Length: 327
Image 1 (cartoon, rainbow, N blue to C red):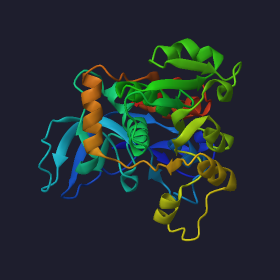
Image 2: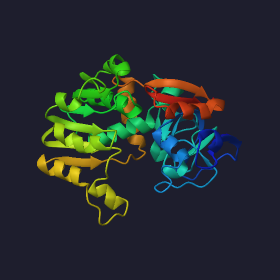
Image 3: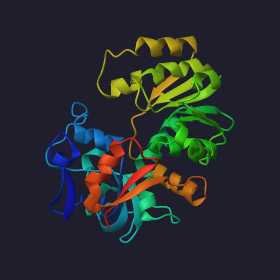
């Protein structure tokens, strides 16, 4: 079968190639998915460039990609919840990376039947960003009438988070650039802040939740805009103590700015490392079929244009998800 493989760390044109490789085999708890479409995310770009090689080293060559939508063509003896021919979507576990290919083997616990009212390309846009946003916002118990600031509302995670927060009945602030203001308003955000002309710290006051998708100074600054007892959840800032322990860091301490902000506001700070979860994808399926969430796609590339898709993602100009159509 054909697969897009990472040959080395570095420039996309030199590091990525479509190769002929063996079709994957499955274990008793796996399903084999004939891939219809996949999407690429910042983690895919960072893996190729080598920025994650200390945290997530990969052998060469490795087939790229984590998001998938497609058709189950084989299943292991232990798989009871799916049948051959089911139309599904998933974010594969890290050790099963390899969705930019004609077939991929996936642990069935990470898989859900895809929403009936969207295409394979749209379904492929959902898993990583949807699970990231859901797990982040549920970790801080988002609820009706919460005021939440979602940074980078035009990005893949941000655009999903806006819609998910609105489905929960929250009031949503979000930040974006001038060119994307009207586009992000259409997602349902209540107050769109143009970061090129406005200072969000002067607009957002006493927020219940800040969803930090940017890191750096934005993580510490989140404590300036939350209320006493507020919650900050990050997917790119400093680790929290619990996550640090999970990674084996026994002597970890929060950076001083975050620790001070947390103490001053008597706040909760969480870092979320997204985990594949088929049950949560089934919840997202219900929201999509109910019209609460719509997939946001920037551009669809053919399999043969995979390198161009990575280059476009890296440009930072994508509004929504970058899709690779396999079949």
